[in-house]
Image 1 (tube, rainbow, N blue to C red):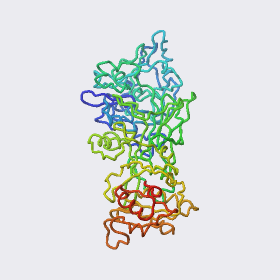
Image 2 (image 1 turned 60 degrees about the horizontal axis):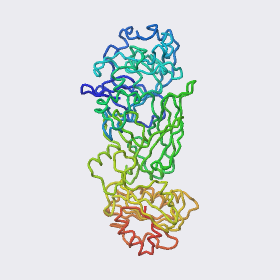
Image 3 (image 1 turned 180 degrees about the vertical axis):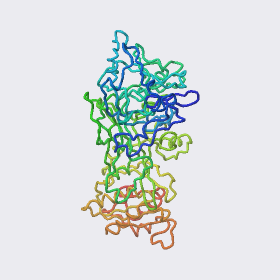
Image 4 (image 1 turned 90 degrees about the horizontal axis):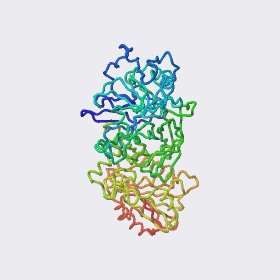
Length: 630
């Protein structure tokens, strides 16, 4: 909802044009969204106050309360005294909500909105159809086809016109749509920011139809001829840029106008750059994902789903609808969703994505669909996960949203666009299938496909190398190729499944301890599992050792857990091995190969190729059948 006028950017925010330079953009998507149905008064969607005489509630209000109704038989109804009032909550959404994701792909004519271009509050006013009936609106036969609204502010764009738009008369006269002329907001008289003295509220529509500082209502045969009615709030085909839209008059094609909102959903928890530590306490409890969802036209959101494997499988969320529908069964507010997931499942996920469904079974598209105005973006909302080291000896998951609010730098879309532009992408980096602007031709496999190969005849193991030892790459987000091992013992790809062996040799380097830790935790959770676990864990320095406290606790509490550390650079008094993994270290700290033993390893490819595989062969391990590489 934006246009460039006189080298200044403007946006219609909840139905009126404001200067972007003097206003503020959307706020961050916070994980408190799910706790409150209503948006706090201060952070609600506003930018600047009007400067055309509506800026003070203490000034003479008569001029502005004299609303002119044209195209009817009667003029100037008195809103507060002569009509019954309606009061109910409504979620207002800017049609440019989530536009910044589109701007990351290709710049639109609109400025950046994150995923917080939305608010919910209580509005009180007079139903529009009561006013039109009282005034004696004409019939369709007599040319009454559209109801036009015009605000009081003179705008610099569009030839100096006031902001205006229109809706079909059938919408305006439909009591089920709850369209009101509002004069109160959250129990108080409207402030200038919210449209003092009167604004239109059209539940289920985009904010751009809800004109503030309402001055005139005009019932006409043709739709509004206002500049902003045509040059704003349209979703044009993706090939149409601004120049083509002007030269071929795409703005005036009625099929591209936006009225009702589309289905949408967003993840608010985890928030951007939130870190979830991985330790004995956090992995014993589920993590709760949360977010919001809405749809348009009064349609109820009936389902929200989460995927952690790129859409191969979906988990149905719990929905919370704080509002009751109106007597016609329509819903005007957002709802909240939540889903408890296992932390160990988050460890294996590269991203979390959400999609919603409404009662007409409309759902969100997987991929972003670009349009020149950057409006109605409702592709799956994706949060990326990466490994991090928040504190000494600790490993964690850091979550990354696609964008940050306004012009703030950050988000995975900006990062990946930078990689694409710079061409500085590591050769082994698997580009995400969810990235709308990156080459995705390389071979990829979904989790559900991998899980089909968890039996003795065909076991697929995903490898995730690290930078700590043996000369691996410095990127924590690299994915090694999938390695297929034939005729191996069955191994659990899901942490809660049993591993059928008595002795486990577990060799890890750097963050390669993560899958080893998962397997160890799953075994220790099972009181009937007596598998012995012998861990050799290599790092560059003692400070690089991850999960050391948890590993040492397991050693102290369980006789069947043995852990031996290897560091390249050791401090004075170091009680473990110094250097690299050698045959002598493995012979001293992991069991010999036998029918009861199995080796698991995860770490940099050089470590596995030059230190693990040849030395295990010397220890009687059948590398094809008894070595599993993560």
